[in-house]
Image (cartoon, rainbow, N blue to C red; front, side, top):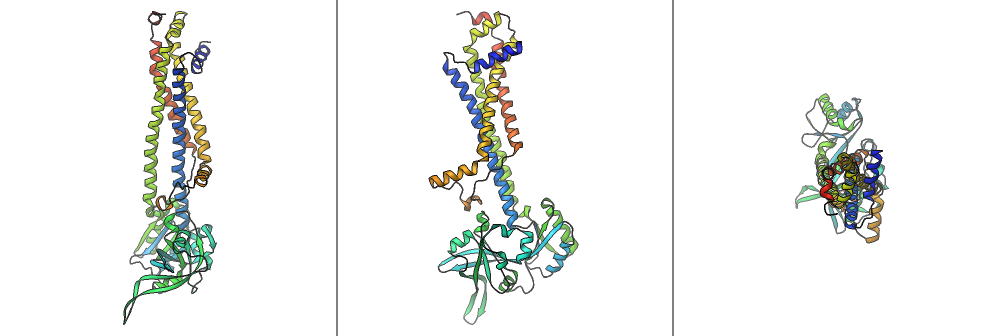
Length: 415
């Protein structure tokens, strides 16, 4: 009965419409302050998680799990390297590649790019290039045809479309009696791809492996061999074992090493944002302190009456803890609900505002990704809700303790 009585009075104080409307307004502000802070933190962490997921997925679409390259940029015995790698049960597929820098020209437009010579079938076994092609096919890169597949951003810079012929110019020149002449070759655009990452869409182009070997005068050598492994997080160990088993001095690398700065910066950013926004929740939660202090001052006579009819100090303590807890729990639940709904529909909301107002939230050349992804994780929601509730409950202790120590005679002196 005592617990029901204390809970009833505590909840009644929350929804009370007394003459002191200012106290009620402060209670509402505290509640919605917690709700907004919780919702913002859930949405922000979901966006950071989405960035990490999209970077991970898109990087692995264009990047092999690991690679083995020659010391001087040429790997002569690449077939032996591929055979050694294929013999390891942890390696799913291998693909040779040639890479080099070039200048692409079409009319008066020009743009620098990295050319990657590939065997279409082998390349698709280590990376999912076909999934990002929007025109043409990687299979169009036939030996001797001198076809090229471009990213959409590079095609936009050059103002080319599928079927156009562009000129590829290399820094290495040909010595003639008239001087050094740059090496050039005409290529036909046979496909376009879009990853959604400016780093690739603007700077990477694919050609056939044999065409690249002729272009860079490598004879039968390649730059290296790319590997797809069964466990991407074990890629460093796997590629090291393959290189040791092959016995040749080579350079090894893996997807984590290539893009370690991306993922480290995301983790650091996530930690910093979590701490900063958690301070916002703390400020909102500790507003409950000022709210309850004002309520205690406003309810001095009520406290005195309750004490004189037999209520114990612990009962007074529970009444105001209940009031503060209701404010904190309600605010947290509203914030969690709003945060989840916003995070689940964030991409649609952003698209609506972009199309309505003609703005772009993310510049692809700055943020690498042109879309605003969101990845809502249950662990983050539980962590945020738990900390918000703990801070809210902690904020009720001092005002409730102060109310419990109020002397009845002192409170009723001027009534």
